[in-house]
Length: 302
Image (cartoon, rainbow, N blue to C red; front, side, top):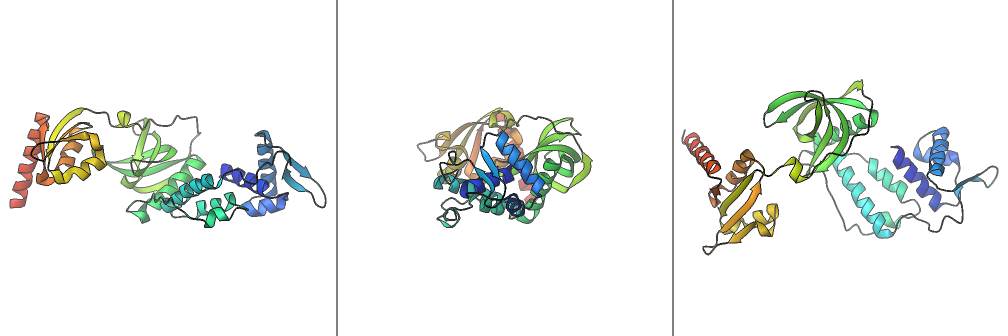
C-alpha cells in the first residue's frame, strides 16, 4: 500500500544520511518513477527533502530538520509492532512482518527486544479466515465488488456488496459495504460467508463515513431482564457483563438485572447455563423458555 511505502521511505531517510532513488526503488520493489512521485508527496506533506546530483549525492532530509534518528520512541515502536504482528496472525501472510522491517531500519533492537504484548486476531477457523481477509483487502484496494453466500439468523442469501472497510470488532472480523440486495450499507461477518470471491466488476469509490458500531446502535436494548443464577456462574457474569450486573442473595444465588438486546439471543444465552439459571422477567420470555425446555425434553425422550 502507498501509505506503508511512504512511511517506510521516511523511516529510511531519518536513519541514513543520504540514499539514492535506485536504492529505494529496489528496497520497496517499485520503479524509480514511483519513488520520485513518493518523494514529491513527502515534500507536499511538509517534509524538507533535499536531492543532490553527482558523486556523494542522493536523497536526504534537511540536516536541521532531522533532530532524532527515529520517528518513534522504543515503547511507541513496540506498540506498533505488536499491532502489526497481530494482523499477520489473522491474514496468514508476512505482509506486516515486511512492514515491520521497513519501520525498524537502523533500529534492530526494537525487533529483537522483549515483546511483552502479544495479540492474536485469528479465529478458530484459521484456514478459512485468512483467504477471506485477503479477498476483502484486495476488493477494497482495487474498488471491486465482492460476491458471496451469506448465512444469517433469518436464512441464507446470495449477496453482492461494494466493500469499504475491513473491521475487527466484538472478537470477530467483518466487512462494511453497500449491499445491492438491501440497497443500503450493511455489516457482514466473515465467518458466515461462503464461496467468497472478488468480482471483475469495479465501482467508483466515494467518501463513506465509518459505521456506527456502538452497542447502543447495533444492539439496541429492548428487554429488561431479571434472573437468578447459581453462585458458580459468577465468573461468567463478571466476564460478560461486569461486576455490577448482579447482587448476591441470602441463599448465595445471584440476582442478575440487566437490559438485553433481543429475545432470541436471551433464550439461547440462558439455555447455555442449563439448570443453573432461572429467568424471572420478562414473563412472556420466561414462558417461551419453558416451552423450549419442554420441547427439548420431548426430543431427548424419543
